[in-house]
Image (cartoon, rainbow, N blue to C red):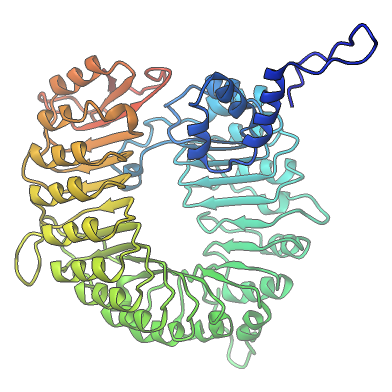
Length: 589
């Protein structure tokens, strides 16, 4: 595998002498390392010795960058010279909640510039929370072997950039746009795909908030026999969906678009038999979309419900009764997302039917803190009793009890992700009026595989002592409006050895708590603290003691610092020091 090695030299007798032992060992090592597919295993192998470090770099084909500022593009690409698939993450997750100015950074331009020099063989790219320009996409489209593009929560580009990708990437198999902000340049990008049969396997554009030329989309679907995933935006009506489905019965994943007619059907006109289209798609296992839903059309999906393993109703404003009519057929369901409009009664129906459920997300239709959320501890308790294989849950509510959370910890011990979002600030157990300490304590104590935890409600330092004592596998912790003092954060930083990502907002933690994590920060991906009790002096002490840690103070765009307190602290490890593109409202210590 080492093309740069000279050929073996002949011996005096004319026969070739065997290669030296160290070369044989390196050849064998490179072949063995190719079978290591998990990122953590490869990272561990690279630490064994220099030869392993070199061999691992030469055989790594998939490169993951968890923070675009943790390493410079040149360093990453010079080490991993043969990577053909790259994943890069940019802004931290709290950017999704408008807690970070939009022009903070995470620009893709420096990365794609070096890729054009070093990674001409790049085939796959996944970006998350990155700022991507149309020019970036145009440069990317020039890579001769490029075939998969996934953009998640990205912005900066428009339909002009998509048009270039569609027209120039002749081998394109995947174009997935997920929760992106796409500018409408009034370009018909769907029509830019080349004529003739395409290689498309996945086309997701449900986040693109502009009309599309449907006839071009219909022709594209018809000439894409390998298409398995198709997720449509809200400008595609249910009548148009029907036309697409009869042309692509091989689909396994479908996002339905608006799931309502684009115009009122004239009296006497015959509507298509939507149910027959779904019945013909026998391979469907994942169903989503349902934007601007007309519930009367829900019976159309009945024929595929029995085979569904994933159902996303997170855009569907439906009632418990309407959900019950669908969910009673979904016995194989493993992933379910839904709005809280289904109320506790709807969740009880899920619990009664979906015994194999592994992931549940319940989103609020009204996310205001003073809203009346229609789901509560009653729904959570029902899910814990009926769905005992549950591994991941995200649950928004206004009313919760320790008893319901404790029951979930006992009934669902396989939980890996537990995110409970009690939307009102500092809300206690609504029955006993006690803090929610014991509930969260039971989660970290009884769920031995827990790696991600989000806390909410009225929590004292006692809850954080439980997390520090029992949360030995927790890698991601999100905290909001919780804790009594610095002691709470101290429990976490001293007690959670696997902690990688720590997100904290509006909590009473200050400099003393921050200093307790000095032994931890180099091993973490990042620490985010906003609206806490940190001072500039305390942050500066951390920066002085940990020179390889980038300490950013974000004061808000055009906002003057009125006192010594820091609005937002974002700390992350970096091999190449502070970034050069920090805006004026970011101070790097």
